[in-house]
Amino acid sequence: MKLLFISVDSLRRDFLDTYDPATHADVKTPNLDRFAERAAVFENHYAGSLPCMPARREWLTGTQEFLWRPWGPIEPFDTTIPRALRDEGVITELITDHYHYFQHGSGGYYEDFNGFEFVRGHEYDAWKTAPRVPRSHVSTQLGFSVPDDPLGFSYLNPVQYPRNVDGFESEENFFAPKVFSRTEEWLVRNQEWDEWFCYVDSFDVHEPFHVPEPYASMYTDEDARDQELTFWPPYGRVDRGESELSESELEFVRSQFAGKLTMTDRWFGQVLDALDDGDLWDETMVVVTSDHGYYLGDHGWSGKPFEAPLYDVLAHTPLFVWHPDAERTGDRIKALTAAVDLNTTLLDAFGVVDAAGPHGRSFIPLLRGECDVHRDWAIYGYWGSSINVTDGRYTYLHPCADEVDSRCHSTEMMNPHSWFTPPKPRRDAESGEFLPYTETPVWRYDAPSYSRHDDPLLFDTTADPRQKNDISAESDDVHRMRRLLVTALEELDAPRHQYNRLDLSVDGAE
Image (cartoon, rainbow, N blue to C red; front, side, top):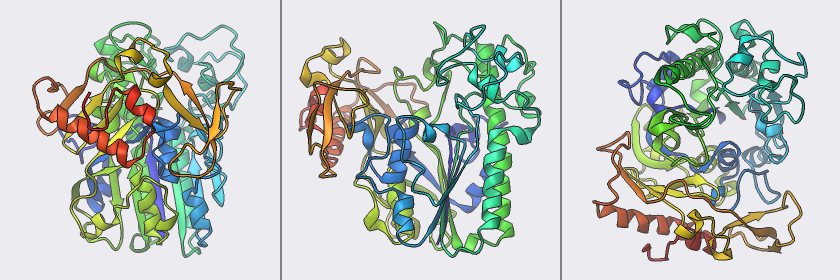
């Protein structure tokens, strides 16, 4: 088996003709459309642990981590996909411009691959140190305040991106073109291997939505270099504060997101061409997905801010799967699947499902046509925040307890934080076997818990796919979905603290 696993960061379903042809019909993604015609299209696929690295730990280790810890490294007790496959004699490769793999606090993600290629410079990547003060239009369109002489830690330093892209003019200089070009080259160079796993993690279409022509002007009549317009809006409410945007400003941001998607799609097409030219389709499984979406003014928000409710714009993610031996390749699959299932599924494709993590379920039987139902629930969220569950039709967004909302610091209302090594000395940390999926001792200590909304929210996404009408006050399904949330927590053996923090009892009642 050969397996190409591609993540396109922040890819929204509703910008893809395959999923929502009416909403953004003018956005051109001919190559994603071309692949969708060949692949199985999953209609009810949901994110799990958000945002970036929590999602990748789910994919690579099969651990639904947001119930236990936030953004963090691969743990010593984790078995990653590349480690498991290397033990079976499969060659493994990572190609990415996702710089978080190489930052403090997120170690262990790339080390198990036989090889990796890192495309430098995206977002806050600590890459270039000159020019000292960039003067290009990129600096004036950031949407953030830039000091006259910025110096210091590059993460969240707004001048880092203008430095990194100083001199970028041609399309080939940009990140998605480099990532997918190197993927195409890797496919050509590695034809002698009988079995391989290539993981392509494209940080595009992640912000900043900075693109060259013709993409910058493709979906707008505005001057794409107008210093009054930003391609990188701050996270937050679009109706107030630093993140406030007028409707015309929002339209420009959407146009740049769309332009970046079209550029990414063009270069993804070169990978499809390489699969065609190398006659690789009959022996290669290809999976394309995303970690989450991105608010572009939806529900009044920009970005993916910690304080925003987790609507489907972020959580309902695209998934396309080509399997050369699958009965349902080319079908639309309505069964509910979750991000954590990708771990077990990818390993199952190589026949090493025993190495899968504790929380995923292989959907290879779905592809083979052996079943129509995969799972009854999928839960998703950020660590320490509200929690969400879906049954594939209804989405239920559950807030934290009232005491948490008022920043109560009683131990029973805090979020339990389990991590192998605390990032800072913690006198209150205790060591023990606190994780249900490993006997390895970890540290546990309390941390703040924050709610994204005051009251429960319930949406019928069949009747209301945009989640405009909260029906929690009028529908009996709110009680059923709350019980389903408790069922999910019980099946995952979630920490008891989670029930207290969320004001949930074991029978699902509040």
